Amino acid sequence: MTIWLRDTRSAEQYARALTYLPGGVNSPVRAMRAIGRDPLFVERGEGGELFDVDLNAYVDWVCSWGPLIHGHAHPEIVAAVTQAAGRGTTFGAPTAAEVDLAEEVSRRVPGVQMLRMTSSGTEASMSAIRLARAATARTKILKFAGAYHGHVDGLLADAGSGLATQGIPASPGVPAEVAATTVVVPWNDHEALVAATEEHELAAILAEPLPANMGLVPPAEGFLELLRERADESGALLVFDEVISGFRVARGGAQELFEVTPDLTIMGKVIGGGLPAAAYGGSRELMERIAPAGDVYQAGTLSGNPLAVAAGLATLALLDGQQPYADLAATTTALAEGLADAARAAGLQDDVQIVARTGLLTVFFSGAPVTGHAGAKGCDHGAYAAWCRGLLARGVYAPASQYEAWFPSLAHSPEQIERTVCAAAAAFAEIDR
Ligand SMILES: *Cc1c(COP(=O)(O)O)cnc(C)c1O
Image 1: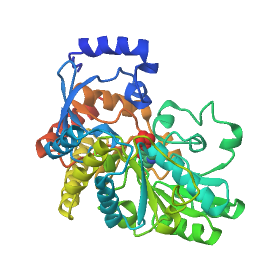
Image 2 (image 1 turned 90 degrees about the horizontal axis):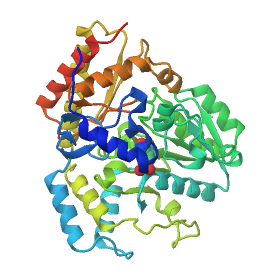
Image 3 (image 1 turned 30 degrees about the vertical axis):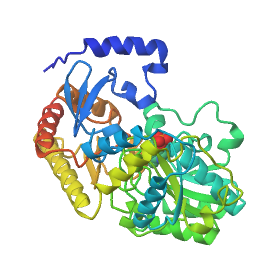
Image 4 (image 1 turned 60 degrees about the vertical axis):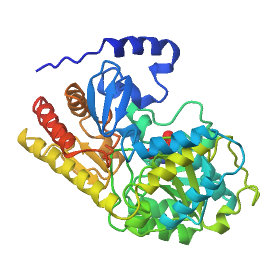
C-alpha cells in the first residue's frame, strides 16, 4: 500500500536548503539519507507530537535526539525561558540561577560535586578530556567502538551516531597524530579492555555507560565495574558520557542506576531542557584544576547563559522525586511491548530485537541480540529503512537510522503509543523477507 502525504512545502524548503546548507541541514542525521528519503521541515511541536510545514502530524519519538524529556513546548519550560529572556539573554557575568542548576545537578549525580557548563555536549567532552590529560599527565584516551562523544577530533574514530549512519570510519581533517591518541576497544569485550589498559598508558577510559549511539546497547553484567577497576589499577580516569543517559534513565543517570561512579561525568541534552547547555563535572579536587581555580583553560561566551539555565532548571524541577521515572519507565515499557506485539503479528518476532531502558528504546533488525558496534553494523539496514519510511508515511517519526535510539518522553500519551503500534504493525507487514 502506498500512502501519500502532503509534501509540497517540505520539498520547496529542502530545495532552498540545499542551496545554502551542506546537504540541506545543520546536522547530518536530520537529512534522512540513511532511509532514502527527504528530511522533514518542522513547523511546530506540541507535547509528544510534531507538525511539518505541510501540516502533517507525527508522533515524535526523536524528541530532538534526547533533550525533550517533557516533550515539545512544555508550558512551564516555555514560561521559565520567556521570563528569563525578558530580563536579558546573556551577561557574561555570573547569575544565581547557574549556581542553582549546579547545586541541583550535584544533588542528583553521585560523581558530581562541582561542574562547569558549556553550550554543547561536544565542548563538554572535549573539555573533560583536556582535564583528564592534565590530571594524569598522560595523552591517550580509550573509547569504545560505536560510542559517540560529539565531533571532537580525537573521538571520531569508529564513532556511532551520524558517522555510523553515513558509513564514515573517522573523518578527513583529523590529523593522524590526533587519531593516534585514541585507542578503540569493542564494547562489552572484557579481554580487549584488559589488554588495552595493560598495553597503553591511558589518561582516561571514556564510555557512554548506557550506549545509545549505535542503537541502545546496554553494558553486559559487570562491564561497568570492570571499567572502574581497570581505571583504578592503571591510573586512568573513568569518564562517563551521560549526555543521553543523564537525568533520563534515572534521577542520577546511569551511574546511579548501575552503581558505578566515574571520576568525571559529561552531561548535555536533558540538562538544557531543549536549549543549548551541557556540562562536565566531578570531584571538587579534579574540577578545581579548571581555570580560574586552576591552570586548565576552558571558557565560553554563552556558557551557563540565562535562557539555557532557566530551561534546565525548569526541566529538572519537573523531574523531582521518583514518580517521573516510574512514569517514563511505564511509557517506555508500553511502547516496547506494543512494538513487540506488532512484530509478532507480522511474523517478524525472530527478526527484530527490541531493547528498552527507561526513556530509551531501539528496534534492531537483527536475528541475534546486539552487544556491540559489529552487531549493530550487521543489522538489516535496508529493512530498518523501509520500516522507518513506512512509519513516517503513517505519521510516526522514529529515528531515521538504525544507529539512533528512540526517546520516549513524559509527554507521550497512551493514545500516541497506540497510534505508533498500529503504524508499526502495518509497516512491519510491508517488509519483504
Ligand atoms: C549528543 C551527544 C554528544 C554531543 O552533544 P552535542 O550537544 O550534540 O555536541 C556527546 N555524547 C553523547 C553520548 C551524545 O549522545
